[in-house]
Length: 217
Length: 105
Ligand code: HEM
Ligand code: HEM
Image 1 (cartoon, each protein chain N blue to C red):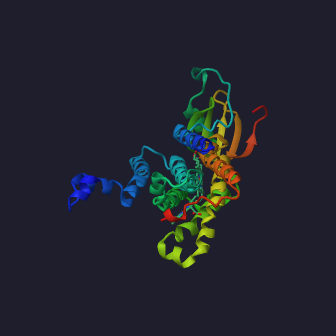
Image 2: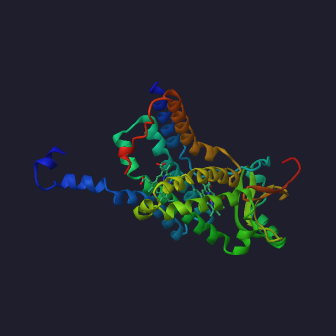
Image 3: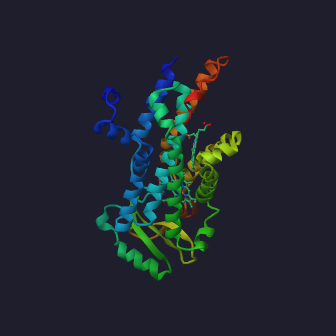
């Protein structure tokens, strides 16, 4: 850092640092699990049916990660690493949606025809997935700066669709998988942070809210 | 009281890190069928099911039973469990929704 300010041109190390720290590089990281899954599938090592698990779980993890950052900032106050994550929250949300789309694509390939898909759409483990995806769609469509500006305060209200989407994902996971353990384990961090946030709010009812507006990108 | 949020954070990180376990068996039901050497073969189950009008996509062992992903003679896409010695149909589910469960299972 000091070297970079001492010289008019960035050193190779500083250049590398800013490259690794850039948003495109973060997107690249987010794409790696998908690339590995895709390679395994094209190779024949992973059945189409077995692509549902990694795509769905990755989507859910990214969604949870996106949803953790805000409340964590509320609990811990502004931190540098949280600011770093805040600037990447949109990427996390969008990639959660993209992995969910991939999940759907492999579901469609595996089912192979519309009749079979319609026949099971009423199953609790399936409609919950469809509704979760439907709720994520408007978020994805309004995730650009132009839409954010145009929607103003409504954008924030729209973004709250993430909560029912997360709840439906939890139910989807639970019901499609005959078991609550995996789903609960993933959603536990979110529940814990919300609890901590609620505890904080209770402690400081008359203090101003601690959400640091200034550092939101 | 700053310890509480920090503890929650630590827990959250630990939970996320510790639970990256890969796909687990669904283990919808369990079969007590003795050692695998006494089982009938997968091929035998597959050909029996095919003769009965099933379409088998995938056949594996789960919970000591044979677990089959496929289509029933009625045309439903399901996940079904069969006893590995008797080939008795024990459990049929569609995406976690139970359609059939044999007595005692
Ligand atoms: C278009 C709607 C959706 C359909 C039809 C669908 C379908 C499925 C199916 C059939 C499975 C079972 C896979 C298996 O048996 O291994 C599954 C699992 C899963 N799905 Fe979805 N899904 C949908 C949307 C979503 C969304 C939006 C998310 C997340 C945000 C999601 C996350 C998951 C997860 C976490 C699993 C469990 C993975 C596992 O442990 O096997 N799904 N989904
Ligand atoms: C599907 C595509 C999504 C896009 C494009 C998207 C985009 C964004 C953007 C642009 C922000 C504003 C702040 C920022 O730029 O970092 C944001 C905030 C947020 N996102 Fe998303 N998001 C998406 C999905 C999700 C999902 C699936 C979740 C969780 C389930 C989620 C949870 C959040 C939360 C909790 C906030 C903070 C909202 C607030 O400050 O009140 N987002 N998202």
